[in-house]
Image (cartoon, rainbow, N blue to C red; front, top):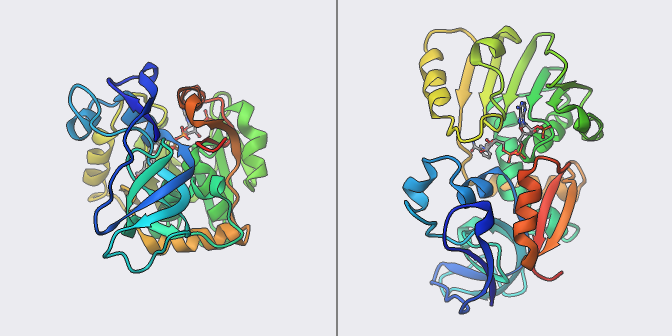
Length: 318
Ligand SMILES: NC(=O)c1ccc[n+]([C@@H]2O[C@H](COP(=O)([O-])OP(=O)(O)OC[C@H]3O[C@@H](n4cnc5c(N)ncnc54)[C@H](OP(=O)(O)O)[C@@H]3O)[C@@H](O)[C@H]2O)c1
């Protein structure tokens, strides 16, 4: 089968290779990949721009092939897998998803509703799932609340805007000037250009995927009973966000606002909720670019350039 491999870290390291078809274990499934999505975590694993990545992904070179969140069709199941069958259309996460075939643990895979297509489904397991947990679980966003989403144009932020709007919140998105109209199409009621405008007003909840403002600055925009949810640090390339995470944990002991940094947990219930939202068009992933497997390097570079308005998809069947 064809798969993207890399012998070293870096954007220039992705190569299309021919490798043996992988064998599955008893709790795994083999999936024919129809779409795999590109987002920040995939980029971190390819480039090791965050040095901490090397600790678990390989010190000198990556141990795993690139790609993670995918959608496709099950073509083989392990003998202990009871809730999936050959022919199921599914999405999930597994290492090495930039390939014709991927081996996934059955518990990390969910069946797609009929009306959901593969491209859209491939954006759900990580980006939409993180957004759902940020907005609903940690942000406790509800109708009538004022919500600020920093990084509203990104993979996570674009879903966070739609989910918060769907819950009846009044949403202000923050992004670069050239993406303001894109963020408005996601449903944001106001959009702020981080390059030329400042954030004004007081919010019940702030969801921050970029960390371009300090926690002190963000607290000035929070109501006294407000909640700050820190998702990532896209504005600080190379930063693991660890120091911010520690500062958040410490500060949260002494202040009355709720501030929290979290890591997305894979959760089949969330995945089912999101797939149903997708089928009912309550959320819509925007696909900015779709490229064949052999152009994976180009797809990842396009994402890394920051120019994409929406998701970049790799499709082995193109
Ligand atoms: N906690 C978790 O479990 C979890 C899960 C997923 C992702 N993450 C992290 O969350 C972050 C976002 O992930 P993603 O996949 O959504 O990435 P993404 O698609 O690249 O989005 C990044 C967002 O940050 C904004 N941004 C970039 N530079 C900025 C700056 N200087 N000032 C203000 N905003 C800026 C971008 O705005 P423009 O494009 O408009 O410039 C964009 O909206 C990453 O750090 C990622 O590692 C964490």
